[in-house]
Image (cartoon, rainbow over all chains, first blue to last red; front, side):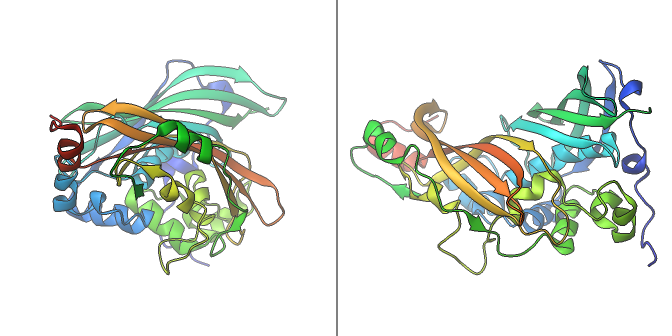
Length: 154
Length: 182
């Protein structure tokens, strides 16, 4: 079978536990929240609650605009981790708080950093990450925390 | 949500609903490629571990896997066609002051990968209900649930906690509290 697109070089590059240092930054990626992206978040999450796509419904509930849903938010944060961890990394624990909203026309930046590191067994170590979404309007909207199992070079 | 427009007794609701647990309900479909593709499209994720069968076969997982955060999606029934045995319906049955919802905090532990072809099930328990003042509603009702997801071998795939805020519209708050939220 022919691969239809080039592999994502970030996600296919393996991160090894020995090479990680507390304080390392995770570059992440950026997203522009166009109205097409809004349609993609509904399609991808299958979350049809109107507050995420119907401006009138959102205004009626007291919100300034529609806001991006949980499915999109966790996908965006998860990608920061899985891109960085590589194909043999495993997201063990993950939590996030949706404190402020990401809305149409926001420029969103998904980022992370390494905040902890510990040994697990002969073949693996564990790394703690802070990950977050921020936008140009509000700064950090969605802080998150992840624990990732990484292979050792051994 | 089941909106209670009149007097609302949070203690009675807690007594009736805390600990209430759904049956173990199997997801409508197995883990499948196209849902993963749409999920990845949302955030422009091109990770071949999630998208490329050939790459997945050669990986440590031996097949394409779903992004870990999709496990709950595949353990559910989806929105169409409507069904009455979706475990998440338990949240919508809890009596609340308002019908509007904002999902706030989510926490998961992922134990095993969900591979394409796996068939996941879920069971959800209501673990906390409390009141909290927010900008939109001085007496919003928050509902905490815990969900366990297992695969076709009854192995634990993931366990998660979710916190949902329910609130009234500004008009409902004004009518019932005598003051419109700012």
